[in-house]
Length: 423
Ligand code: URA
Image (cartoon, rainbow, N blue to C red; front, side, top):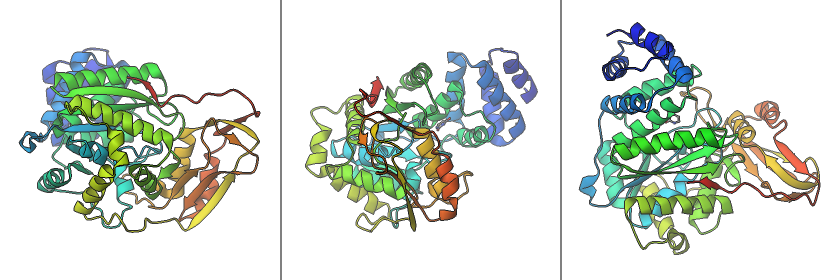
């Protein structure tokens, strides 16, 4: 077998055979297939697609490139959630302890932010002392003791995907449904969760800009999960505007704690509860209403225990950025658009995100929203507050907001998109 014949087969719109797929994934993981060869193959897949059989075999080969975890010894149902990534998407933070408080164990392997979307681990690392890197034994101990753990995936889990995702990120080959579906599902199946709820984001701040593409991605991932024996469901959710009122690491932790304390923005609460209900149903846990666990403080108890078990101090003040800059509303009327992608890029340029995976992030940087689409605003009132430790980046960050805000004349009828668009 050789890389060039595999690349040519896909370039010429052929269907790759099982042995070709097994070989190319294994040889790439071992370093025998070069990065430039794999990027040519990834581009051929992006342009020419894959059949369901090819996607399934590709996913399986990536799972087999590393170890598989197994939580059956815990004796409790396990449930995980994966979001395809958005702006202000802090849902994992309140969701994991909430579902744990309702009786399912949540082994949540999460990632860091790259580009305009934030990463769960970067957010949690703004809590003084909190550690993302755990050994498999430490991860199991936290899960056993707290019911939930949020940590980085170990190097042994789907190593083929680690290499391939980093390569796709710098070769314009991220946005291919077969590659996104196999990347996400190889990690989730190898992680060993019994139930999985996928939050497939749709809109300007998401990979999938329209409902048809999001539906195809969701169906592909649900099919892969179910054929691997994982109870998998997907919600399609709106990402045309940021979730909640914050985008940025410590800012989003603060908002998540507000949700766990029974408050927080309505859209964050609604999506957290919708995903929690799906996770509990998929895991077979009956008779628990997650809204009760937010009201009675048990979700907050699980959060505090989980943060403490990973070295964090849940009572420590969160970092704040050195400088703030207020962006006023440009006109009086109804706010009809506050673009998620533009806010994500602004937060990123302020220092909340990274351009290369080795870049540091600023814990306090980000964007605070003072209004959401559907709200009445008055010209000159604060619309956004930008937070940064590097004020010299402000002009560059502000440039990203060009055209992001639309205010219609007062009295214009406008109904914001629902959070959950489809299931
Ligand atoms: N997240 C992943 O893990 N992989 C992708 O390809 C895209 C988003």
